[in-house]
Length: 284
Ligand SMILES: CC(C)n1nc(-c2ccc(NC(=O)/C=C/C(=O)c3ccc(F)c(C(F)(F)F)c3)cc2)c2c(N)ncnc21
Image (cartoon, rainbow, N blue to C red; front, side, top):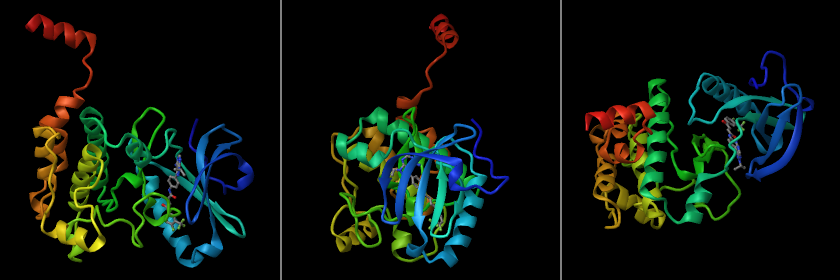
């Protein structure tokens, strides 16, 4: 089904509202279907009196502008928005399997093949964003959803403060993923996403973030690069984590080399076609 038409103005009557998918502090999210096309999406409802509407309009327009020319299988799409007198509605790509952070909490930690698949998809999404000179800046499990085929969907929940649940809810959101240069308030570039990818990979494999501590201690540990990788983590995985968690942004492994790292290749070799198998067997 094609994406909701953004030629003519959209309004609530165009959608059949389904079950609630969850709620954030700012608003609730529902499953929705566009009546004309049957297109299924997520509809986020925000109450204007909770948003300083002036700024939001421009911010939203800018966000939809940025996101409308982002097309990548691992980046969740914001298709458009509309509003009535009291509410703002966001039309967002529906992620069929929900929140990655809930899966991580439930599983405790992920197997190396599963973690490698997620890191490879993240590297692909980040390479795409960086090529478009977009820095995500807020990579963490809470900002990743899972599509109906198990693929990950990076989203920018950045602004959406979810109700305090069992998430790491500190005032400004968790510090765990902040790179040293952002903690120091230095100018920062796209390499901040490489640091966060290293933190994310560590958390996938270990079950907690590398610098997890009290907010003060976390900051001290980040700037001193004070973390330990448990022995159950394979040598190749350790190697990739340490090549991403570098204080000097210039020394962090570039994304194209992440995709070619032995740990990724070992777990993510594309399934061979029958013909490739046949050809390889003959060569052997
Ligand atoms: C509850 C469950 C877990 N859930 N939640 C989602 C979901 C996914 C993405 C979003 N994205 C946004 O909200 C993005 C907002 C903005 O970029 C924005 C930018 C500038 C602004 F001013 C603003 C403004 F709102 F402040 F105006 C917003 C929201 C919900 C979801 C889904 N897509 N599929 C399945 N389940 C799902």
